[in-house]
Image (cartoon, rainbow, N blue to C red; front, side):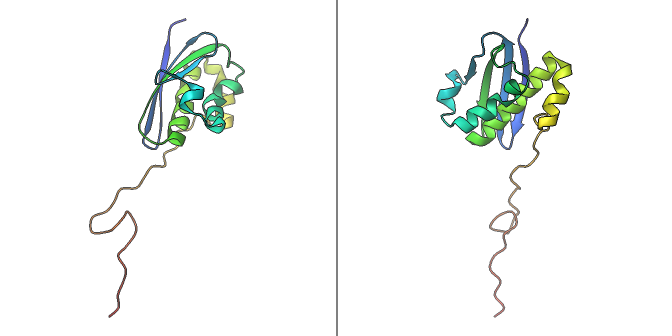
Length: 128
């Protein structure tokens, strides 16, 4: 089987994911998953699509992560893995969609507007 690649995004994070048949290793930016995400919750988030389909030991995953914070990076990796698994086996899409892994979360930081301190914040109003 050849390498299947996909892209996942969340907030400012971008994950380029490469999936191939193997023993279940997950490498992120040339580091093991446990080293890159010490938090077990974030490790769980990254592995969710694989465990949902019971294929965690079947594929090797290589991820290039860039931008954002650790939570956004973990969710970007999850979306990228999901898209790669759907490309490998389109019949798995309903199971992943039911868990909510297929949908790209569009929420991102709103831009700062000119003449204001932040995106929506106003300067203090003074009546006199």
